[in-house]
Structures are given as structure tokens and as C-alpha cells.
Length: 359
Image (cartoon, rainbow, N blue to C red; front, side):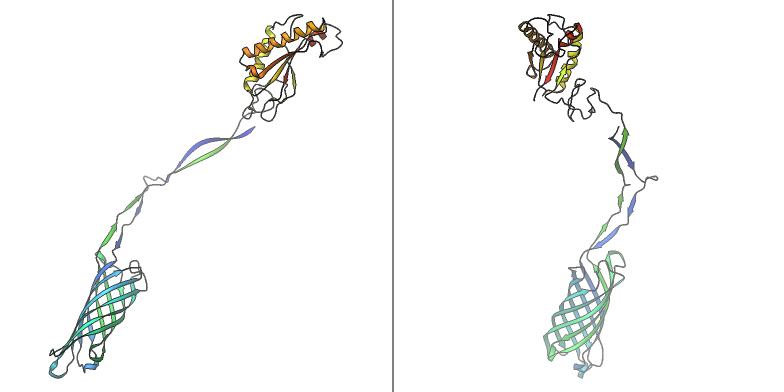
């Protein structure tokens, strides 16, 4: 017979050529806060009759709140040579709060990331001489480009083009082009990670052959037999346990005429019977004693009871629980061979039977 037997074979699989270790390149991440310095060229408003040009500079503090959205505080200062009477100059000092939207993630972008911005703020406008000085509303919009970090500490190059509306003296417009550098305020370096070689443990199930073993010959294999050591010739169920309401003649358990003493051969047979009771603790049976036809019915009834009692006593001596056994003598009321014609017929009638009872 073939059965499935788990032979737990541990299979160690690892790609080990020397000592293989996976190396991860170090990576750098930057904080969301940054500063920028952007000097530039300003084209002054024609509303003042300008004939020259202007210079401007912006100092920026920004914070990136999402991969694409940032807010910047822009502190700016501009000077214009307007070229009017007496060579008066026009000065601007102010600031705006700008919302910046990048078209890509500034942190993990390609080489250049485009962006747009829109801001509101205020400015102090001052013409020389100082008789024309006033605070005014300032609004601006613009586009720009910023590179990815090119050097250590997150240095980026940045280019802005801005349109500015100044509310001074009825309002005027300016155009500015600024270029400079942007610097992250902090960074984190992720060190090299060493990944060990992969080790896999697997359990291999192997099918092996093993012979059929049925020690007590009841037709049920030992691995499934819940009632071992059943006597030969009895009927059993699928568990190997004796079925109720059947009779088993105890072959070899015989007595001499007019005695109830067990012979050596009888005790050998009963040793095997006791093993069946020990293997099936729920088994209940009656020990039935019988005689031949010689003698009176009353005498034979007493003799058969004594023989049944002798068998029960011996089985209890061998370890069978007393509540598993009852003993009853039937005398010559249930002859196997009738009429008896010789000594052999009478010996067959002097017998003991095992009657399996309901459990």
C-alpha cells in the first residue's frame, strides 16, 4: 500500500557566490523650506515719461506644501531712472505673498521644472524729491523655470519673468526679468543599505511505500484500527471494533467430563481473548457455558455455570474490567450436535461461547 508520509526535508536555497550583498546607492532628500536671491532687470512704466532702465532684486523665502504647490514671501527693492525734470529717480520697496504652482514635482523633477505664480502685496513708492512718496497696492503674476539640485546642499538655478501692477498715482505697470539661485534650508542623506542574500526554506513532501500491516487479521489496517487484538473470525466494523449480537466459539477452551478446571491450552486461548477486551474498553460480552447430554439437566446446568464463571474469573485476572463480562450456564439446552453418537460429539458440546452484547 502507498501512503503519504511527511518527510520534512529542509531545503536551503541561496545564491551565494562568495558572499552576494545588494548595495543601494545613497539618496538625498531636501526640506520643503528654501530661500532664493534673484537680481534682475526692470523695465519702468512709460506713465512717468521714462527714458532709462531699472534694476530690481528679490529676496524670497518659500515653503513647498505639496509636490507641486508652494507659497513664497517675496521682499523686493527696485530703482528706476525715469529721466524727467531734474533727473528725478523712482524708488520702490515692498513685498508680496506669492502662490507658486509647478508643472512637475520640484523634488523629483527632470532637469528643469516650469512654474507659474500669482501674488499680492504692498509697496512704498518714492520719487526724488520726496514730495511724491506714498504707499500703494502691488499685484504681480509671472512664469519661471527652476532646475533640479545641481550641487551639494540643494542649489538650484532659477529664472523668473514677472508682470507687476503698482497702484501708485492711479496705477502703472512694470515688467521684470530676474535670475539667481535657490537654496534648500536642509537635507537628509540616506545611507547605503546592505541587503543579505535571500534564504528560502521549503518543506518537501515525499510519498513513500509501506506494506499493509494488519496484526490481528480483522481486515482493518493497524494505522486505522481503533480496537486492536480482536480474535480471529469475529466480525468488525470500519474501525476494527467487534460488532454486537454475534457469537464466537472459544475454540480450545474445553473441559474434562464433570469438571470446570481450565486446562493449559484453555488459558492460552483466553490470554488472546483478554487482549481483545483491553483493546476495546467499551466491549460488553456474555460468557456462555454448555455441557454434553450425559447426566441430568439440573446437574449440567450447575456445571455449565461453573465453567462460565471459571472463564470470567480468569479474564478478570488478566485485566478485563468486571463490568465488561457476565457469565451464564445453559447446561445441555443448546447442543451443537444432537443426538451425540460418540465421544467427539460430546466434546464439541462441552464448550464456552463469547456472545457480544450491545454496548
